[in-house]
Image 1 (cartoon, rainbow, N blue to C red):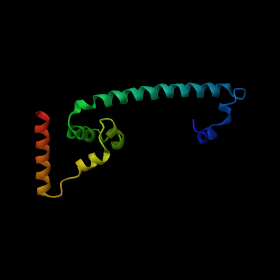
Image 2: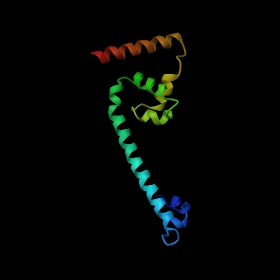
Image 3: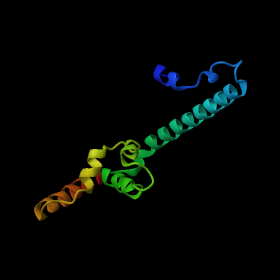
Length: 116
């Protein structure tokens, strides 16, 4: 724990003679949070390892778009391994019909390369 955080914790947490129940509660909560943190780390690793199943960046961006209301975008982008900047660029509409055609052509090229 960082020293600045330790200063904010009441002294009763560190002095078992003054309030042992408070110390036990603190230790119990700390242990619970450590277990939860470890579980979340494992889940994140599982999701990162399964990110390749989503295939293209387009599919990953669509998943992020679907979950925008549930999870923060910047946090969720780390799970499938895409950048938040890439996601926001994907969401931005094309500026011109020519650019839209180029984007469609690029997607088609990538899909054909992916199939072969």
